[in-house]
Length: 240
Image 1 (cartoon, rainbow, N blue to C red):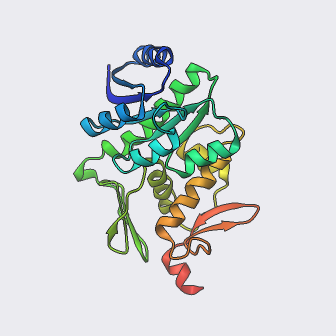
Image 2: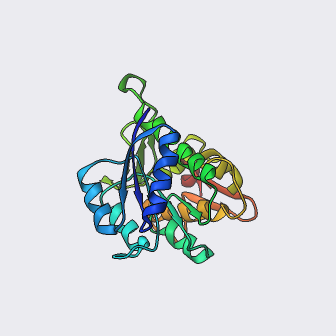
């Protein structure tokens, strides 16, 4: 049995029961269900969860607003599972701190696969032993420490959700290398389907707000129009 704690938030009790049954068949033993935002916030304050599945339409608080509140408490990946299927809704969910977005009706096996993918990537950080610590990446104004999961910008510890951290770490491992949106999605999230390119774009935008002096004129995480994105190494920036 898997020991990761998962929090399911939805106002449909029948759906929560179905999701719990699905995840238990996948080997998850520690599952908490919340019908309201208030119950969800209480649960997150009481225990540490490895992943959160969140609906948007809740009776006491909009799921997007709840996501913002959750991000003040936890860095656990948040997977939106909702009937709100417009591009604007998806973008909003990702901008506010969501790591993935799946619309209803959904394929239960796809949901299970996305959950496994999120947790598999988290385990890369949590399983690192001190004597096998990963390289710390230092740039002009920020430092990425994969072992401790810290992003330090101008000497300040900046909260960074799991998927943003993983994306930044991937860029840091490959400075000055250009990646297409598809390559980035497949490396950080898994296999890509139509529409997932927005996920990458939003996460890059959120990273720029953390590490760039002027996010509207990025000098570190730059766009090569029609090609992709790259992280410019400090030495190369000094040559500019």
